[in-house]
Length: 290
Image (tube, rainbow, N blue to C red; front, side):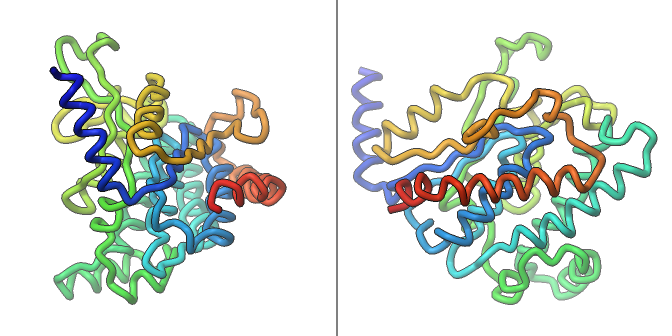
């Protein structure tokens, strides 16, 4: 009986579904700029073909997911600006500490992600908006979005999802008591940012915390457990084409490269490498979008 209800729901979802394609950005840790390079090419070459694309991400892939998801309704994200401004600021702050990325990378990533996300938000209070303008003057990701005053959370709710791994029962120290979930709806920018950071929480890159929290429940990095089953469910439920953008999509990286570098040029190198690989494999991308 439960299976019949699920089958009926799946048929209803397919009937009402506007998505014909699914892009998923896998976990990438310190190599997430490689994915940003691929995302930049997708926006440049296929930015007008994203209306029927469901976009998900997890861990390091959550950033590419967010920036690609926002590239709708004539809003075009300039990822070059993001890398040259936000990444530089993160690295600058990280390098103030003797431990470098250790205990610091995600801490400063959240601070600057908050500034970046709030640049997109249409605030109703003029004084808050003016304060945001002042605080975010170095985070010029996309002026068009800010000027158009789009409802960014509504956009994210309409076309994207984030995977998190959340504590559901029993002892918090038992990994079997955690469940990987796909979150597709957020109340506001704070709720989204909390989910965004929960998806990519790794204790050694944070300060004095073993876990993060989302909606008052403990979370760990969304990549801690395989999400292949959930990805397959998306593909089957919506009968859509699927593009999995992992860091190994076109090349193999050394596992040591997963450590987030405290050198900006290393991140820039990965970003340009992602761009070059996407251009080299443009036929595969064309086949997916056409």
